[in-house]
Length: 176
Image (cartoon, rainbow, N blue to C red; front, side, top):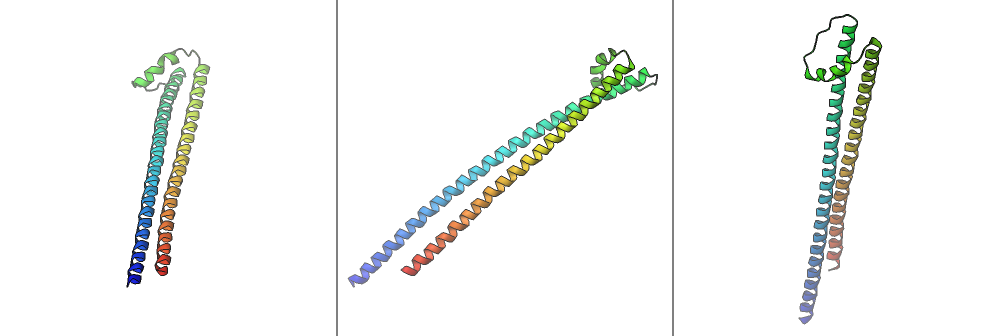
């Protein structure tokens, strides 16, 4: 009878040890889950910061392009006036900002040179905007891929730990 009691006590000790090991494993898995969550939050924050910067840069380039386009329109109007063609005068305040610079131009060649300069500047700004947009798209893709990889790794790790725990439990259960 004491032999049965000893076996029962031994089985109880094994079960308690197994329960304790499972509790420890559960705690470790929860800690890993929390670390992965924090990592994903950091990646999300980095992505948001980068995308906000790209949007701000895009707005800045668009404003610069708009200003250059207005300047070009103003130079074109002045060129038409110098050539004797009546053009509609704009009352837009942004056009008046470039008027002092245009009034200093004394020949058609100077107006043409200014028009060419402004057109080149606009083209350069458009290219810079396109480059920024491409960089933003690439950054978004890279960060999204990294975030997806981290989530996949976490899922695989969880699945592996759960499967490993079930296998160990099944093997230990057969030994008892």
